[in-house]
View 1 (cartoon, rainbow, N blue to C red):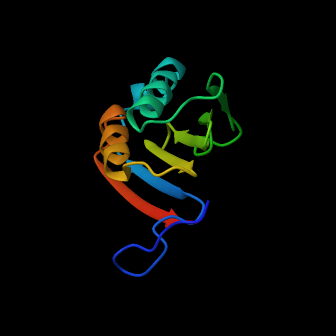
View 2: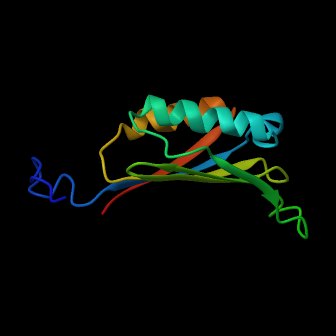
Length: 128
């Protein structure tokens, strides 16, 4: 899926884009609840104009270490996936939103930070 050059002379889209989010100071009740995470996946997918492929997979594991203990989310979308890892102990969320179709990264960032009550967010966008 080759892209066209943007105003900087770089391919605006080669195969896809990935938004990497690291959220600090998350609401423990939000990142520690499977139904809240499930609702996030469903609403995010709709908000960024994607189509979910099946139901989200949400599992709580990593119990040998409080830092790694928490939920993991995998939501397949028809253009790739949304993956998240949540550390209740640290109050952090780590998410990757990848799609071979362009989406509004700023909207996804704001929505995600608000949904999980984050007090600090870092983002990285990779065009692939």
